[in-house]
Amino acid sequence: MASEGSSPTDPGGSSTMTKATTWLQILLPDPPEGRWRMPLHTNNLRRYERKYKIPKQNTISVIPPMTTHFPHSTESGCGNWVPVTHPEGGLYFYDSERHIFTDAYVYDPLIADEAEQFIAHLDEILKLYSKSLPPNYELVLEIEPWDDGEFQLMWGYYYIDHDTRSQFWLEEFESADLIWELDGVSTFSHIGHAIESQYW
Image (cartoon, rainbow, N blue to C red):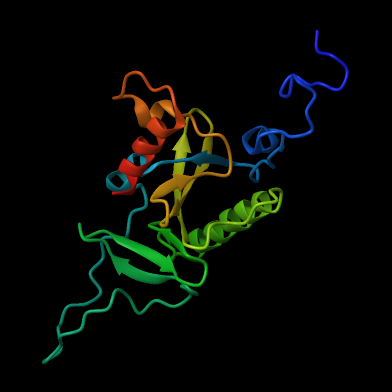
């Protein structure tokens, strides 16, 4: 039985607790109904399994003379999101003011609104911590339909700290997804190597 003044997380009764233990005691808010928040790592991204379909309709049939610049779209309503082409050819969007990437199709106002709700939800979680984001961070968002018997939208995310070349999350992350190829993982430095390998 724990002595008076001690706790299961601090058996010695010391007033100093690890940051990790303190963070575990924070109760995170649930996302809105019909959404499911999921911490991801780079290998979890479903870039090649996108379910959003652009209508198969050709709206441009003539290329004007001397045309050398081919912008992504003339659609409006994209806000701060700037369309960018991934080296492998896929379209994604970047908000440089908020340091956020997504390949959700934010040209669609409904998806853009979903992204804003997701960002607001993560901001709400951040306010619960007494720690601010690293100065050189970026956030990656993924918004995908998810059907496990009950249709929901999966809100997937991870943060990147470029100074430490690491990914991080606002909740516990199951490390088995990162270290499944490794044996004998016994220290955080081992996990750190696995996380840094995701950075590249």
